[in-house]
Image (cartoon, rainbow, N blue to C red):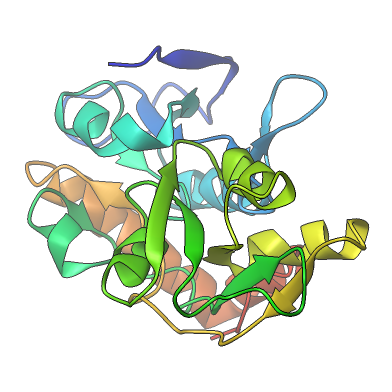
Amino acid sequence: MKKLIMSTVIWGLTAGLSLAGSHSVIRMGTEGAYPPWNYVDDNGEVAGFERELGDELCKRAELNCEWVINDWDSIIPNLVSGNYDTIIAGMSITDERKEKIDFTTNYTQPDPSSYLAASEGADWKTGIIAAQSNTIQAAYIAATGATLVEFATPEETIAAVRNGEADAVLADASYLNPIAEEDPGLMFVGDRPLIGGGVGMGIRKSDSDLRDKFTAAIDSMKADGTLNALIVKHEIGETF
């Protein structure tokens, strides 16, 4: 099991707030390596769309929260084992994941996936396609005629395209867009498949009260327009 790193900044509202179950602090697990969804800024703090979203959800749910960074490939096992209380890490809601954990309602629509390559003639249909392991994109590629190569981090998938190890990478368009804009040697090719049922917070099956608190907070942000404002600000995808 990979190293678990606790965020150094813990924030709260007041000591008298109601908390989920027996938890005095709700630990928010994220990857910290998938901008603009979540990343670690120059001050060593979790930042991005999900940091702003998570902080606001905790305020609305009247919960004291702290942030925990965990590698993607062990993020579900470490939730189940109790190392933190939620996953808020760009995780799409799928039937396979729902066998292991519960989800809140979705806080984003399904984000189109895109193929990013180093040449317009890249074979995105049957070639070697990189994807981060345990993602909806990896599962999608595995069901096509392409050859899947998996990597632990999203940065490694981009490196595989740049060094010729893969013909293209398949990932969320919101992650790939700024990379393509900054690197003229990379370009989009092929289809833009719509995969998954949107992104939600992962919660242990035993924590139904916590799931319901966050679902209610998400619904309130949808209702008053603040969730759409965050989606537009961070260029995540379609609004509600």
